[in-house]
Image (cartoon, rainbow, N blue to C red; front, side):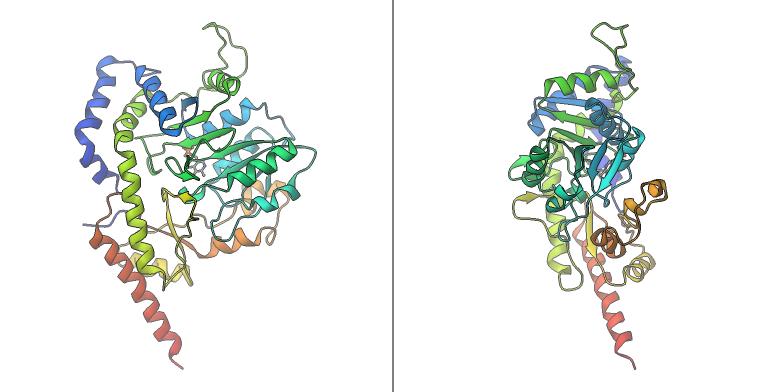
Length: 375
Ligand SMILES: *Cc1c(COP(=O)(O)O)cnc(C)c1O
């Protein structure tokens, strides 16, 4: 059987009866839009994360957008964020005509380097979006401290970290607002698009809830602000209700798979560094590899799928050329982009699959060393 980068079919087979029952409930009830399962899921999500409020929404991108809209972000406002993330993080900022202001990352964790944040603050700075890259939380004590000093809000982009922990606190509860994604390939994924935001602030929650459905007011036909259609689909909520029951177990299985890779590969490549106070959910298991492109090709020849997250930092993306950044502005991010490689990672990895991947990586470097030694 071919190794999958993320094996969603194997996961479905494991929970098939529960997932089918949940989906069938929705179809039988025909409550497709904001059916009761959305509120049921929101209740379970906020218990899982430990915030007062959870709001399901249509995607991780829309979660970020709702969070920024809840803070009434205006054209020209500046938001500090990382250049080493998925495009959605800075896209949500730019879509509101605000300006993403990038700050380079820490070399070990690939998360925003809090020590660099104060240098990026100007009179126009309104907030910070930190990203928990690859499933490991950013350094929120330092980030929140930098925000407090400068009177800024903090949004946690936890699209890759739902279920992770920072100093025993759950991801998505670590800032003023936490945002996550339930895109199928995320650690907790649904069967289409979905997302959620988390907060302890009742006012922010109510504003985001209003924006989620066309800026609805207290009365059904009042529209008190210009909003979005950003609801979480009821069938997606149903899938998540079935999967959430197994999620804590899956996080352990992810940890086991990651430990298996790390213990066998640490002589050959740079394996992920997880800080002692962090529990990662390994949305991606990323190594730093010499001759990354050669290694990727070698693995491809053996039918082993890999991915590059991310080949280009956000400040060098054409979409952001108007911001005026150039090569060399964020050297750590730029360097990581050249060596990073994501290996297959999901809770249902088999030992023999991991063994084959590890042996294939080792054989690549053995051959490389052999070639280099030849005169
Ligand atoms: C996936 C992702 C998003 C966007 O989530 P969608 O549900 O695909 O819109 C945002 N930020 C990060 C860091 C992501 O990985």
